[in-house]
Amino acid sequence: MNPDAPVALYVDWLDEKGNLLASSGVAAPTDWFYQRVWEITNPSSGIKQITVTSTVRNSVARSILPRSTVVALKAAQF
Image (cartoon, rainbow, N blue to C red; front, side, top):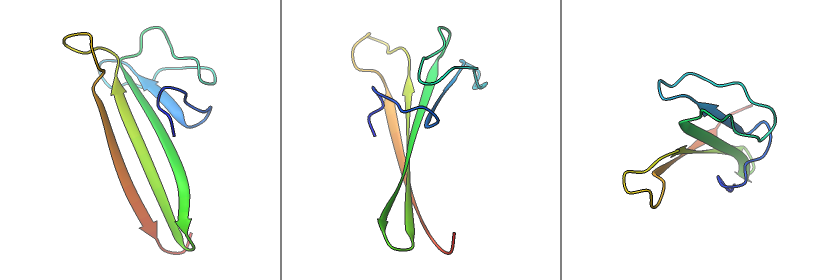
C-alpha cells in the first residue's frame, strides 16, 4: 500500500468536518482535507490484516504531511 499512489476502491476523501466526499476512481476532490487509504491482506491462512493510513492535506510548516497508520488482524471464519 502506498498512500501517495492509491488504488481505486481502496481510498476515500473527507472534508474538514469528516464528511465523505464524492470522487471518481483515484482522483482526489479539490476540497479534500483527509485521505484514507486501506489495504487488506492475508498474512497466513485464516488471518486477514487490515491496514488503514490517514493523511491530512496540510501541515503546519508545509513540510511533511501528518500521517497515521492503524493495523488490525482478524482471525476467525470469514
